[in-house]
Amino acid sequence: MEFGGYFRFLVALVFVLGMIGLLAVLARRSGLGFPAAARPGKDRRLQVVEVAPVDGRRRLVLIRRDNIEHLVLLGQSTELLIESGIKTGAASLGESINLLDSEKRSSPEESTDGEEQA
Image (tube, rainbow, N blue to C red):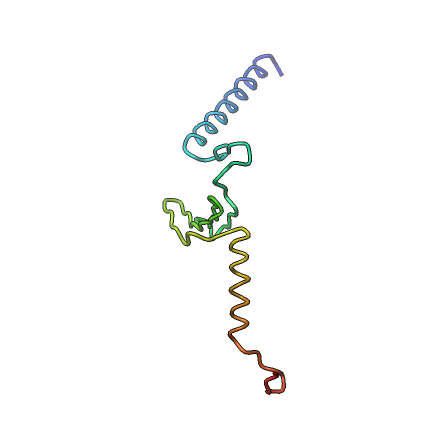
């Protein structure tokens, strides 16, 4: 290959790499690519707990803010709040256990032979 062939190859390579870089910058400015960087440290109040794809266009996102979770359905051009105020942590676990205990006490258990035991 002559010098002209190498030069054309080098120019084409620089052009393609420049186009890739330009598209990456445009994609990032339009909101595609990496999400915004989170603040370092443990004092963060907002976090994404879980993301589950619903279909090709929508996804469910569970967001936690100050130990309260919110379930949001995100689409390409829409956002829908599915459920808000879902409590998390030890308080909600304790409430759930107390609720289960009260349900067990309120409903009498039947024995296998049909007679109640005292």
